[in-house]
Image (tube, rainbow, N blue to C red; front, top):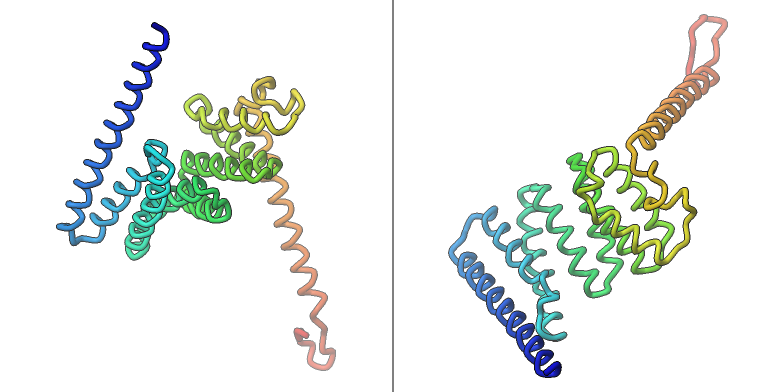
Length: 250
């Protein structure tokens, strides 16, 4: 009886997988048909992105060969979208494309490419001052660094993501930050004071607000000191012509 139930369960899973695959194929075919009759670049870029998003669901591929095809198609269609977004200077479209390319390359274990593209997404997110996207890109960047066993740098990215999450009251919604820390703690040991699941202060905005104020004060001091040095340097490079009593720069 048990064996029979296991066979039934396996059969139902296979049916679900194949049904999902057929549904996905139908969506992709429909999008490709739309692409053939679309001439406007902005609309084509969006369709390319939608097709790429379908292919990014490569975990639903029935076998390794199909998964590789999905990965390559995700890259190719995203590159096509990236080209059109770039022509229009569409930073939001570019950011989405960079994120998708990072995911696709990471799935192929091409970590250098994955890291480069997620850094571009992070830069655009900062440019737009989009905190949620900054956090998402930092978590993805940290995940790539953990893949290549660069745990200390991954920890720095996650600490920044945590700080932004707490200061923007989104730590509860941003479960991926906690999930990433859980993965990191499997690789490195941290003190109780540094562990976000033990030290409740790490989830309080006041902890980071004071640090932010200190950093701003240090930055201001450095800028003032640098300005003073430039003034001193400028004065020391001047001499007085006693004959004409005119200041002359060296």
